[in-house]
Length: 172
Image (cartoon, rainbow, N blue to C red):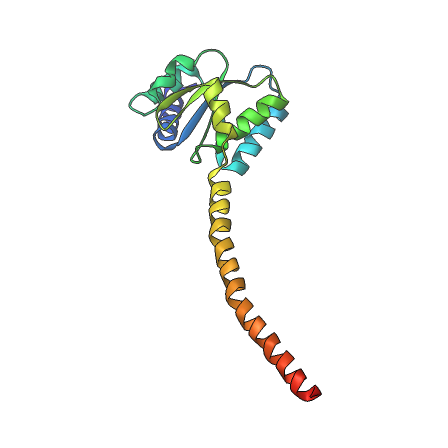
């Protein structure tokens, strides 16, 4: 790799570390091209990315970012997963790791806080931002629909009473 390419890689990774909400460090030894492509596809769908990195270049890119604490995790065949959603990348990587034992979660960091593999797995169990937004919207809509039902009920009851009164007058 030429020096210019290395500089570009370090700059790209530095930008990732400066902007990402979460970074997951994995060991990927033994993953086939098809398996890593599948993992990349799943991460893209969830709004994340997956990249195999050279440890030395990644350590340079970490300098001056909130993720400097993960430098000790960068040993062996390392790949990084990251996303803006703090749950998306951990969720996809942990699920994929359960299906394929060749992908091992080493640890990671959430907005600068270093996480071990168990903490990343816990993070993966949380609902994503989209799931939380959907729950909030449904909570907000439910009382409104109940309110409409309550407001319509007296009108319906009044109409039934008037209809019954009219039927009584016609019969009598």
